[in-house]
Length: 327
Image 1: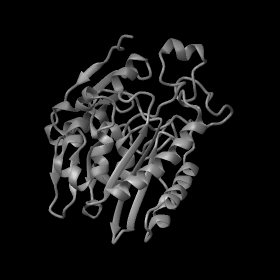
Image 2: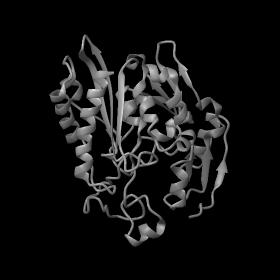
Image 3: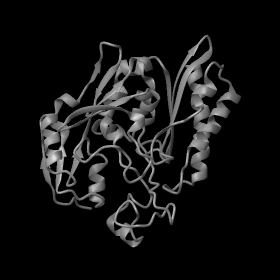
Image 4: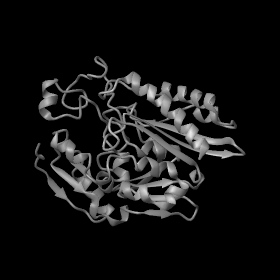
């Protein structure tokens, strides 16, 4: 499958990049690592006249400790840099563990933290060649008006399948978004919409530039568990992240988030309250797993059944809680 024809733009500063996005809004795509965009363009999911290559913007790379104890991560920082960071592994381990599960070493060297946050939603009916999709009459996410996952519905149920966003949700991360009007910060938990088509609150003339981890989230014990067909390369079919703090053997605070089983990564509501002040045992971990399984709404967006993926959210949540309590 060949790439469509496009013009490649190569800015060297954020200000230059957002001017290009503004000038070509609606007709331009952003290239960070290209690990998702390029295959999608080959499948003719995207055929933009312009592509803006961010790799020349040095200021968007790197992990920087802040004076207040927090951390700033440039959106172009490779996932392998996140995975190997000694400081992040010590203070924000759930993030390094999640980053280390993404695809393969080659992909982690190319893929970026910003790209993983902005990853397009995926579906068995969507991520296919043009000929395949044409034979199925297309779908509501691209070129059609029918959702094959939930026929008759007007909502797209394509699943968000990034590995690092659930970890970032557990750490109460914020992101910086730039445009020609300046920059704004927003909590990552407010970035996703829950719709498979318009899945993020990012305009065509805006760019995610930085990720911020607050000092208050440092020191949490972190675990990430991921279901995939193969031991590497594959996207998650179910993923669970947990960040936990304990005091005198009791849970003082905990956050759990799931991915790949909804159109957005989600914090599991009620899990923190159930765990707070208690000692972790099998029964408690199983009860929280039940809550996580109810939060998951997997449909037929992959080759595995929704029932199996929901059950694995339950199992992985239980295992992650027990593992975090033993660290």
